[in-house]
Image (cartoon, rainbow over all chains, first blue to last red; front, side, top):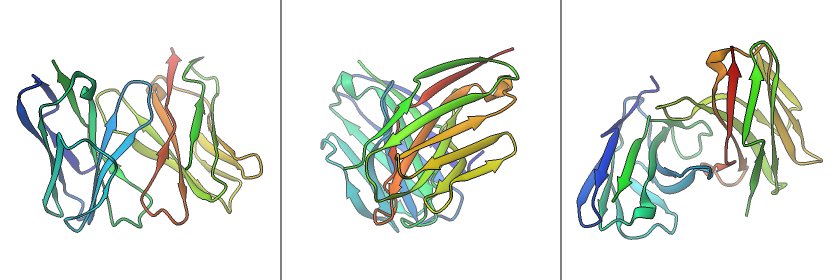
Length: 113
Length: 113
C-alpha cells in the first residue's frame, strides 16, 4: 500500500451525469496531483495542488473541476463528460511540489457512455 | 518542451532471462529520471531513479543506466521472475520544473514461466 487511496475504483456514467472522484493520502504530504492515464499514452498531468492551493491547471476542459479542501483530500468533480474522457484517473501525492518522488493511488477506472 | 520516447511497447521474456527497456529524452536540461512499475489494478510505483550526475545505479536485480550525451536511459532487469510482469514507465524532469514529470508511453513486460 502506498498510503494513497481512491474511491470509487470503477465508475460508469452517462454524459449528462455528475459524479465525483475522491482521493485521500495518509502520508502527511503537502502536494497532490490528478493524472489521466489513457491506453498506450503517457500519463497526462491535469492538476496540481500545494497546501490546498492550485498551482497547475494543465489546459484541462472545464467539465473537470478539482477541489482540495485540505492537504489530505483531493476531489475531481465530473459533469457532462464525453466518451473520450474514459480513462484511468490517478491521484498522487508528494512531500511538496519540490519533491521528485510521487506516490500514486490505484486509480479510478472511468467509463463514459 | 520535453518529450520522452519509450521502447519497446511490449516485451516478452522467459523467466530467468534479462529484460531491457529504453527511453530517450529531448530536453538536455532534464536531470532526474525515475522508473515506475504499474501492476494490474494498481497505480504506478517508483522502483528506481537516477540523476544526471550518475551514470549507473543498481538495486538488487534492477539497474538503470544514463547516457547524457546521447540523451537516453535504460532499465535493466536481470533474472526475471513472473512477478516482474507489469507495465513499466520511464519519466524525465527538468531541474527547474519541480514536480513536472514527463512520462514515456509505457512498456508491457511479460515474463513467461
